[in-house]
Image (cartoon, rainbow, N blue to C red; front, side):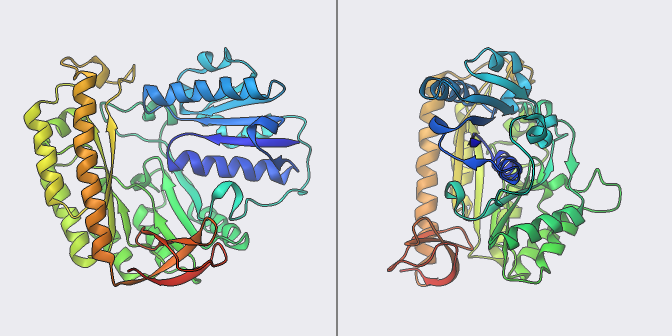
Length: 399
């Protein structure tokens, strides 16, 4: 049987999709383009209304181009609004996030037996493997629907994490991205003293040349111990992604974010002091209900003081069922777009500054794409002066 997996959203969804592909291939299924597949898995996101719309449009397009395809929908949109998705053409099953790990077992006509191949580097354009070690979230951010779609925090025990890393290395991966819905809560549900610091320490001491890259960490979870572990180990990429979300304490309080802008400044400042070469990215939301001009300007001013390498800017989107959706003083769409454009301009300046700072440095990098580009340990994509084999570690001097 031929299959295709279409993925929307975060790194956690990407990791989930890789696991689904591995299960399908272990049963003998063969990957194909959606327009040629017998089975199409659509792994949805629901962080914004546009994410929902994108999933619906994709499902309709697949059904139109491949009228014989069986479409199975999973992910956050499938968990939040299953009936909307069941009504779409060719959708034969909707699988919630709580059932996602067993999705392959729900499907018939696949066959059995280890006659497929592992999901190796290069499949669907991947070079690094994204490994989910945790799912679920118990935070109460007022704008976020994810605790309702992903459920309570659940962690993969450390021996299982090690086993999956060994499998990835055996399959040929040289970089593993460690991700979770709320990665900082890793281990809290295991009741054995395991924590994110335990996991990071384990990765820092890994015997081998694999590189581990930590995915998004909430600022309050990025402790001094974790910063020091990253700074002191060649196994850990000097790369942090720390969602700020806003540059005004008043808005952070309304968002129910458990830190202040001063805390974030100190954290980023410490990382930069011990690792001036580290990439530090962040997320920001513009147009949160009640956001005033002065609060937005505070975000602009704060960003210009931070040694960030890149930012992702998201327009606020009402999610029914969240506290923010019930707030008054909604910001109009035109203002949201204008503010988003201004922050993205600052983000481009940050990226250019960070790349200039890397000129003349030599970094290890993993070759990607067609072998004429590579991604450094500190997350700079560079063009190479000649072609190399894909998925190979090389040293690059940035000019």
